[in-house]
Length: 279
Image: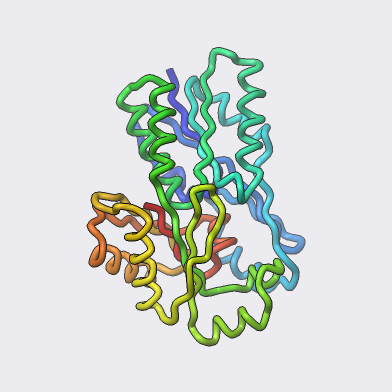
């Protein structure tokens, strides 16, 4: 039996960072359109080149979810597959994966395929993937594994902070004057993913230290963090990620804080110096 984990490329986990003796893992890439240039969000994508292209492009950039056929090819490689996608409220990726599941099961009814809406992105999806791998390696029942993963997903939280607002301005989601003022004053936006998978802005903070304190307070208020594993993803901001990790460890009784670089899709939205926390 081939255990199979599939994710879209918003998960911030590269293939080289996944190791398992009995479970295969594959990411299905999204596409990023910047002017006339298309970037494929795979392991070979160079994030600095993407960010430079976005900064130089005057018009709005966009993203495109993977096709059902792309997901189907990944699903066909396993006997028992669990797929995680970015929040269905942010992308059509979840629906594409559901269509792919139906396509594969029509031709291969013996396969088992479970598609789970992470209602998040980045680090929360990494935690889901790793929990799925652990359960699969233990050799559990497929339906029971899927049920446990849905419960785990419901307990996860995501928050993030931005200090570059160019993408929001170009896409018409923030007025240019507001973005310029926020940037010039060193103000960071702090937001979280709701249980429904939408984005809720919780506040603004001026300066790094205050921002990180606001983030740990938000984490404390959102759930019991005792023993929690935290995945901290950064967009070209390793220094800020280390400082935030120190703040989290000082303020909260978490088990660990792991730092990962953002892939293409999360870099597209977080922009340079953005930080995304899954816990």
